Amino acid sequence: MVNGGGRAVVLNDMIRGNLDREGDPDHNELIRRSGIVSSAQQLVAAARRSGAPIVWIRVERRADRTDVPETRTDRPMGWHLPTVVTRGSWMAEQIAELPVEDQDHVVLKPRLDPFQATDLDLRLRTLGARTLYLGGYSTNMGVESCARTAHDLGYNVVVVRDCCHNVATDLHQISMDRILPYFARVISLGDALAELA
Image 1 (cartoon, rainbow, N blue to C red):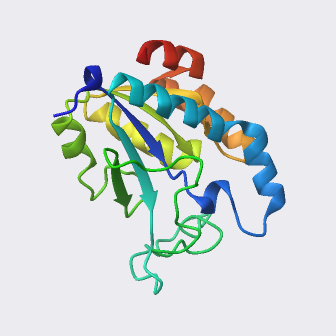
Image 2: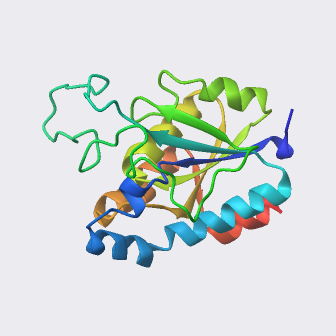
Image 3: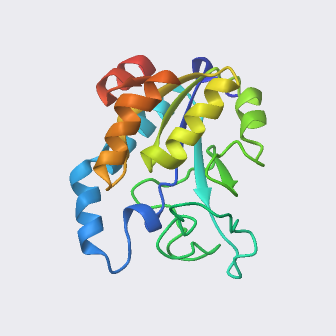
């Protein structure tokens, strides 16, 4: 069992469909300016040094969309990227700047909440994780969903502010400032790196 001091890093949807969109230079520039990728690189490097396991949460859909819920809402998400993120597609790939290593864990989520219908909780408990350092795209969807459930399951949840983003910055800020503090500690990358050291 890998322990890492009872800590694990969980990063949500660090995929090309979110962070390196084909044919969308404006979106990609907003991502670059946010610093989410370079911050996540630093967090991952610190986790690797400390022995803390890294869990990559990703979404992949069937091409026929039969695994996509067609529920009625006031603001349909398109589940939830601009085009369907098909298994094996360029959009579903992990970005090159954050490679998955052999010792890492990958969880493919069928819904926004990565605990829903996955073995994420079982993996984390097997790894001895009690404190989760969360980040990813997007703050108010996948990251927030993960934080809520992790809190309810009894984990100590730490959201690393610099490792989260949504190009809809108002939604990012509301989640960071008004919602996530009820379920987690929200800290800077610098503070997270110090804790992992």
